[in-house]
Image (tube, rainbow, N blue to C red; front, side, top):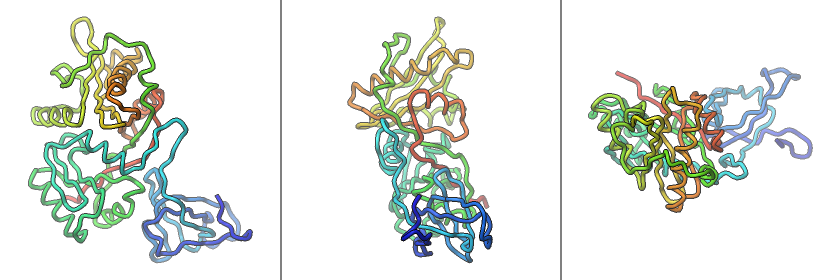
Length: 332
């Protein structure tokens, strides 16, 4: 990481750079002439009272005393890429993922999309802020809160960690609290299907009752109805099921095809059937169907703390693209 000009460390950022992605080198304690350096990269969200606020890629909020800073510069805002993985910016992926998990009803507030689905998943019951709302922030938030209140739902905002860092900081200042941290991961599609066809996997266009019985989020009559509407929405949706001899589901999965992208979700395996390769069988057949429709890249969304799922997806060739989370409005 190069901070120097002519061999000297330089601070080349100012409070006017708030909102930009920066790299800052600081001493472990302000005022110390000797000590260990710490490098911090992220979005500069504030610079007030001699204190810098930076949001890192993983969502961690870092505060740095201005007096401890020995170097700093603005750095390019580009997503992490790895050889062999599909290239995409955050906006493209967020937009595709939203189409692949559509709400039951939606509203528009400038560049914000308000989504509701009876409380079924935070994704389908939150605001997606792709652009400015076209109103002063407080007025926009009042309309958001009222819209969700009319539907007996809490107001939530889905924010990408770095891309929406300034918005997130402003919401936190107003008492909105963070919850449900997640990751969007990407992978090449063809390797998922690079296996012998598995005749045990049945592909259908709609989920039946047995498929839904293994899906662990469709609980309750109201949510079940909303769940089916969300699950079956999207450009081209496939549902995969592996059944035992009695017809009970052992594994399920969902894939939505949208142009070059195939979005995977609801990969579930019955507890007593795990570690038998059923998840790979399901994703393999779904990938084969997506390839036949012209897709070439894959994505999925996973909770940051879901270690078993992340281990499975890493085995399947997925890697982190960017982090996101939800901010929830304060309750009256």
